[in-house]
Length: 410
Image (cartoon, rainbow, N blue to C red; front, side):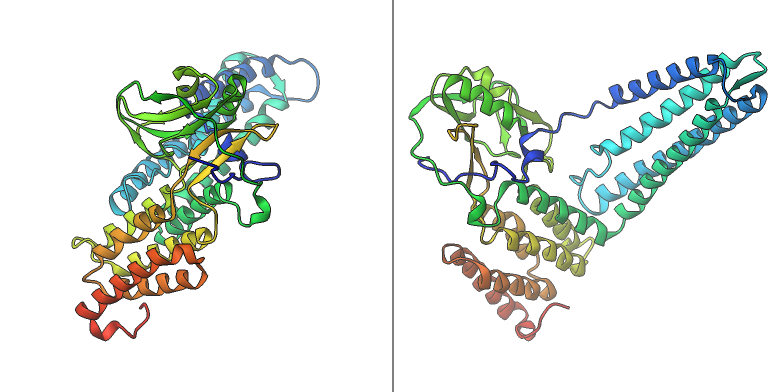
């Protein structure tokens, strides 16, 4: 790969969320932290002497009511989340993991556990005391309000997750966030392209069972490559599946061990939004394909999914694609990420849906509108794939549904 285009990881670029990997969710650690904090406060605050004080018996009553009420409401809301997650997987896409990977869900659970632990431990600490510091009921009240506000947030998210428009808009918005981090909007945001890369010194193979490359720790990879005087060129994109023995990276220039490269590749069982530019296209296409299935037969939903794909493609139509070169502080390229090409975005976002929509004139007519709109803004080197797809869709529409050739989407 000679002189790959430089990526958007320079100063003042919105790439911090991409450079820094999102670590695996440690729900148990989060809940354990909430439990420890709650028990610690419950054991120490009632023992404070001095200051404003209130009746201990009334405080114990409040603590008991808060513990029972918060536990009941939280159990109800989390049961609702599980039902909503199951409903979304069956009606939209099983890959649309709305709550399982959302840190807010487990942080709310950790806060509620901490509040319950505080209520129980404070009740036991108060014991036979006649009075307790005013801070105990005040903290209980504040914690209850915060817990109910957080639970309400989860409830609103659950209701939003069963509304098609919000799911499509949220998926497209998360896709735009990833595209903004990877692809600059103008040539002014791009550093000059580097010179030719050094020759290949070694190739790193995947050593374990089949996994998906969920993330790349870009910053750590750059540091390792700089220390070895090397450049790491990844041969698998984020979101790609690797099998035992597959080549995943080439080390150019300096010498790096396989472990130095592999420890900065974060595998997982499935794709995620964080560093995968194609994931939003895949999810929107999945929703459209499910809507076009004979069991559902909802072409209007497929049209809405096409609108989301159209917005993402318009963001990319003039951007630099294919690869992102990440330099170190001195400007030397240390990591080259393999990113999707223009044809990959078109194939993932449009091809399957257009093929599945052969019996749906509404979707085919809307696809022609999407392709024509992209053609008007596409640079010359990206127009041919659009022309080929537009010609195919128009031919199918002409043969199968002639009256719809002159109509727009319904």
